[in-house]
Amino acid sequence: MRKVVLIVEDEFLIALDLTLLLERRGWSVLGPVASVEAALRLLDNETPAVALLDVNLADGPVTLVAEALKARNVPFVMASAHSQPELYGGDVLIGAPNVGKPTDEHRLLAVLEQSLAGSV
Amino acid sequence: MNLEDFYRVIRNGHIRAQGIVDTVPDPLLVLDQNLLVESANRAFHETFDVSQDETIGKHLYELGNGQWNIPELRLLLEDVIPKSTAIIDYQVTHDFPRLGRRTMLLTAHRLYHPDNISRTLLLSIVDATERRQQEAEKDVLLGELRHRMKNFLALVQAIARQTLVEGRSGEQYRNAFLGRFNALVRAHEFAFADNRDIALQHLIERTLEPFPAHSSAVVIESGPAVVLTPGQLQPLSLILHELATNAVKYGALSAPNGQVRIHWTVETDSARRLRLWWQEVGGPPASPPVVTGFGTRLIQVAAAELGGHPELDYGPAGLKAEIIVPLGPSSEG
Image 1 (cartoon, rainbow over the protein chains, first blue to last red):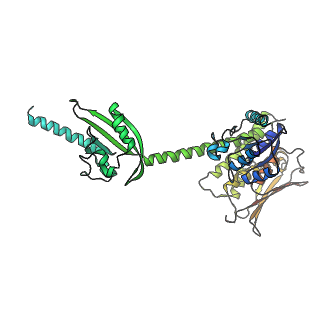
Image 2: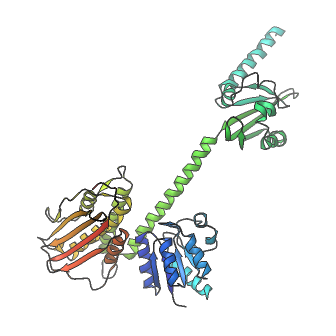
Image 3: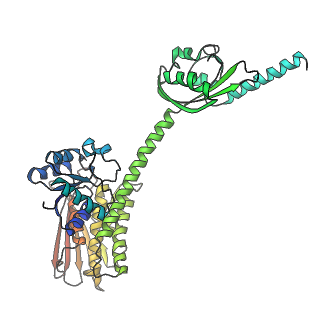
């Protein structure tokens, strides 16, 4: 499967960091997008292999994006400073791995690869 | 000791005991083995708005129209207390008819009489509703603080990870990293300052403070007053820092007589927007970077964050940058 990752993160500097980091490691990045609205609009036209999600976005929690991804069978990984993102984003986030924020590069890459492998 | 002396001793003891009960600042009841009220202190009468007559000799569960007839309390007094001598800070949340929903901390001590005939129970009732509420609010605040701290650490991680390493000494890397770090810290300080209204001019002055090599190297021409929102501080501060760093390395600030001129206007024709110009003169001719580095990407995403876009014009006279930032309608202009 093509290594295409959707990044949903509303802090522009962190979004840039994750984008550059993943691009250097052979990933193609969709986005990054900073809002639920922009993420849903993007998902209307494109389907990533996996998504990396922040919980609290400029226009609300990431819940609707996670639900849209689930409906399309796209696995998602959380990059959240919250230890329990589901408390802020709802039950749809239960079971999704959380690579944390700040985000360790090795863990991020390993978890994304796992999600990619698991979804085939 | 005759009977009269003996009586006096008992009486003194009783007065002293009542004095102690009355002195305790929290509501306190003295109950006999059948949970009838032997004595209640002033704090009890005041807190629960009941008179002496309504209290003394009454059964605990009858007090105040049965407001203490609480299943949790009954369990405590009838099952737990007989098996242990003391219960400390047992929490009961209950809707009290006159007080509303309160959280009470109950502490009970059983006093054993030497003759072992009657047993007295001391029951203190502390209203912890407000304390619990404050604790809950503090927890929320601490959670928010922890979240913000992690977020800030992620920003620091981003600049540490993305600051160029290739072809640099450790010292050069450190200086480049710390320059960006300080720009972040300053923006953060502004965002959490007591006076939240940060003027554009102030932000420019503070961000460029570390840079001028001589007194006229950086000229900030005052424009119309613009008050920045907290969300605009960080991107603007980072853009200015990147432009200044580039000027020191490749542009006007790398030449002895080079100069950076900054000025701005506020357009009000359709929507209010800020136009900020950065103009370098007296330095080497500017040419676009061969590879788009982190600094250039940072300027682009920071400008996009501001809802605008940067125009970078690499001319023979030096770099000319123009940044357009949409402004809210209400801030003073």
